[in-house]
Amino acid sequence: MSLARKIPWTVKYRPRRVDEVADQEEAKELFIKWIDSWLRGRPEKRAALLYGPPGSGKNSLVEAVANERGLELLEMNASDYRRSSDIERVAKLSARGGSLTRARGKIVVLDEVDGISTAADLGALESILDLVRSSSHPVVLIANDPWDPKLRDLRDACLMIEFRRLTKTVVKRVLGAICSSEKLVCEDDALDFIAERSEGDLRSAINDLEAVGEGFGRVTLSSAKALLRARDRDLNIFEVVRKILMSKYAWQAREASTQTDASPDELLRWIHENLPRQAQDPEDLWRAYEALSRADVYLSRIVKSGSWDLLAYAVDLMTAGVALSIKNYQYKFKWVKYSFPETLRLVARTREARQVREDLAKLIASHLKCSTSTAKSEVIPLMKVIFDSNPRYSARLALGLNMSESMVRYLSERNGDAIVKLVEELRRELAKTGAERRGSATVPGAQQAPVLSKKPARGKPGGSASRGLDSFSKSSRG
Image (cartoon, rainbow, N blue to C red; front, side, top):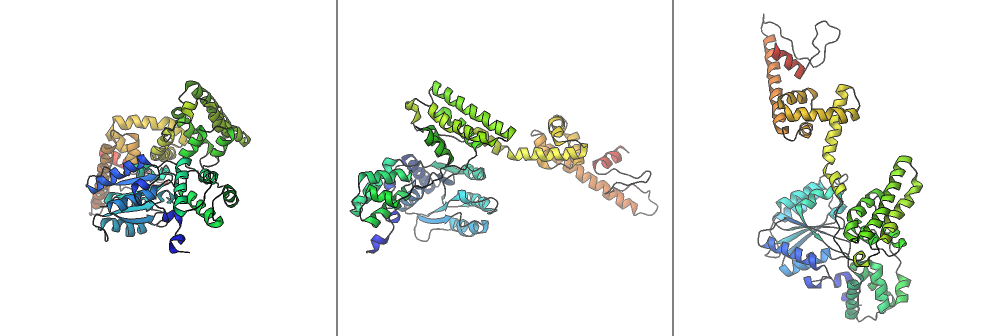
């Protein structure tokens, strides 16, 4: 067997030119325009995030463009370089240096960025962001699913380029071309079967074709069915929603819901957000939302009663019920662009503010001896009025309660910076007053002034129990 026959077909038939990359015309146009803007020195975004299902051509397009433009590729798998020090040492330094082999520069590629864990890989995402800001070469990030909240900052810093799942027709066309090149006898039904089974993953389809061809010497439907087993494939959430809304049969919609890790409540939000984009017929939309609302009722009853046996009804309604409600085929199978649910986006955006509110409620509750719910519903709204209308008094409150800067800015966006400065002035004045009192206490015959105590005096008449802002207020009045 020759060396050429030993090369895996996924490598042997990898595209060398952009026009050899299967389909993805919109992604090609966006990516080439972005790379050319880098070569001219005027990129709008310093990095591009290529996302889409496995085997849709993300890596192939980057390699084809690099080959055509004469650029060197520096590739890293982000899931293998998990520590921030690894990314800084290899990617960051290489991105700043010039190309060793080609004159026009290089492309820095980080693959599988969605595989990085914020807990286990502490600092890795921050290092990638730093790389994007400081690199003198284009940075390409690749992910299957970029919609994880941890990647929000990366999404904001990158040009987002979507790769769609390849159609069965496109996959079959590529497989047929490979059969012709290899002079391999292939039945049309067998290519249909392999293309259908791949679910748009061209890489897996080529691997299957190679396995059947080399195992049997020809590709027939019987040999393909004998050798290849069905795959359990996880889809990203966009594809799951599309599969549900485009399902012809109830079992297809139910099966699609098992191909994601999203919770039923999260899946319902995704369907709710994108349903009007797919079901544009008013009657279809009415029927679909009727099914979706009933699913929501079941989910809320599960939360209240703990009756998890209702979950099956909720899932059936939000998947099969919605899918079978869309009867107008003019819109049902039309490709439309889906979007991330605004409710989930709002939750992610306000997570920090909600945490500050929670911490502030605990602080207030500990001083007023009330519950945190009372602090949230009754005290914090009043404090917002005070902080918006009286910065000087608010600064005294903030110092007395030992609030953080984020708490001050949460209570007043308008006066937050001014109140923080006033708090710093009060702290310096308190420190100066305390130093003067300690100095006067060391002079013989000087009148003894009360010293700011760290702990309140107990059981002594006239003992000062005040400290901090209270002490400052009393001394200033005296």
